[in-house]
Image (cartoon, rainbow over all chains, first blue to last red; front, side, top):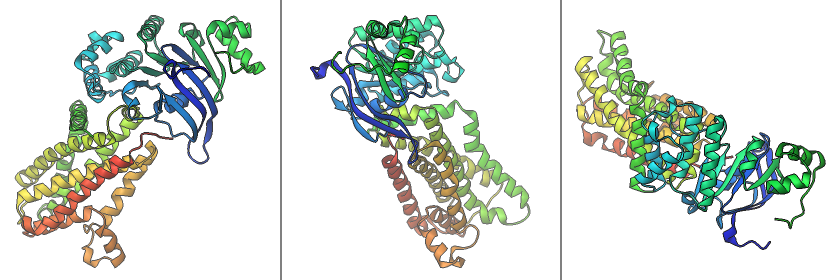
Length: 251
Length: 243
């Protein structure tokens, strides 16, 4: 393997998840994945490919059947990790009947963050001027930025973001990807899911997921070189059509 | 668990209620309205004096159970519960925070309802009004903690809704409101002994015929025990991981 624990943010071996009870659906049949630290890693795949389930397993809120998930050197869901890992669900998970400020102040108390952190998180997502507004009166994009701000409060070492740019206009999307880049430059590890393939260009590394299996795990240039595709979308199609498997050793 | 996070959660829940006039109306005005309807329907009969004290305990319990269940259900559907479960907050802080917030609301509710029923509707009772109010508050807190325990036991949103009638109706049937418990088949009477509402109704029935606090001390202790048990059940069964 040759990886020191410090270089690896997430290490997953044989992760098997069945969702929906006894006669449930096998979402992840047995997934292996290494996510390096300090990079923006894009988790790409069509809806239903298991992105959300994988992220839930990483933050420790998903019941898993078997396999190991190690996050920052600890088993996923370990109490110490709740402070070190930030998680943003696909639907904005904030209180609609509270103002932005009230939401952030409550979650800051929960995350042991201070008032300075509230101001910083608000500035990071560009919502400082709206802080007094009630969340259920905001647009969808503003609401998802509030949700993101909550995850930034405790300055987590690992950020797990489930489709954070859905429904945002191009300017905001660019601003958020700039923010992700700045966070990574400060040493934060990011795992960002998206089904918008063109966001791949903003990632340091890409993981393509289909039917619960990793069909590619590489940098964008490597992926394009290997599949001789002009963009990620075509690379994805190429991989699905030919089931190209990458050798184990080349990362 | 930490007192700081329990308080933070209670404060947050109260802010949410403050922003939502409908919940305040359901908590405070609806029970008053229901008792007014009853006093109007049975005008000129002693029904209000006879059943009023029981309803002072019953309506708040049912209303609190539903409001709390819905509040925690919403916490699930909006994903905020999942976010909290991935954060450093203790499960007990979430449950106790809700219990404290709704406990404070229960006090307001019981004081308003009792004052309205006695002052405006003219209910008269032989027992001490202060003790009746105390039992009414405890019944309301019991309702909200039972709601918390039920929604914590549920693994999904749907189960949480299904549990509402399952928890409430057997208690309403066997608590002694429909017929005296002594007249029930012995199996049903035995079942009623393990259900908390029985003790709330028993206390109020005694108070209405002139019992003092000492007479209902046992009932009060049992209700407090059930409240504590419901908080413990809620805190221990809430799941950080869900299917």
